[in-house]
Image (cartoon, rainbow, N blue to C red; front, side, top):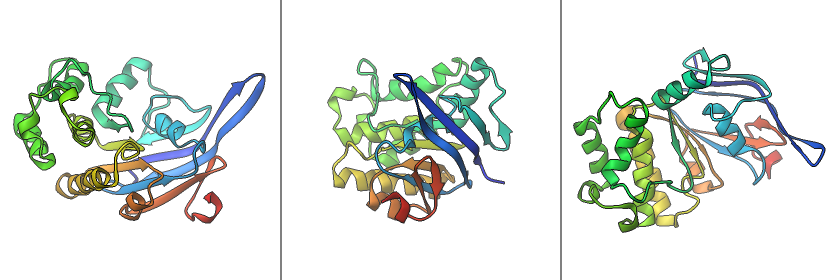
Length: 229
């Protein structure tokens, strides 16, 4: 059974009296422990699809299943708890809170979960060592480089040990060197922790290192790039 399944996902928006069909029956499966690259031209709906898969938005039609559980019938409150415990998010821009230290930014997901859980220091320390950020743990985001801030965003996505991490252009704001460092980190996390990643990207270099590539074009998923050129 796939860890994450999209079943006939449709999504449209209404603009100036006309309907814009973004997703027209998306089907995909993401296996546990895999790295999947989601590619497609700008405006093809990659971010819209990630938002739906991450339960941040609802499809007009279709189902999203995570660990075999259909999330479509869940209340907003239940979805919020479910999302925080099961899904990690990495965005192109790190979205760290500038008034919090690196460590405090990493504690935030657990506090949002209800404040009853605490960061596992050994696990978090391991992630900081893996990313080379141990000595930066008490620094504020403004004292970190762009590459360091994005690595913090990766760690933050993993604090709750989610089943899957959804990444939306995570290297899009990085130079080639920092982009390679981030991809090395993703591969290491998959190797050491069995982490699953679905990554929306324009980067051919990143996609070449994924286990599978999917192409979103004209609202549907394809497995060959020719139609998405």
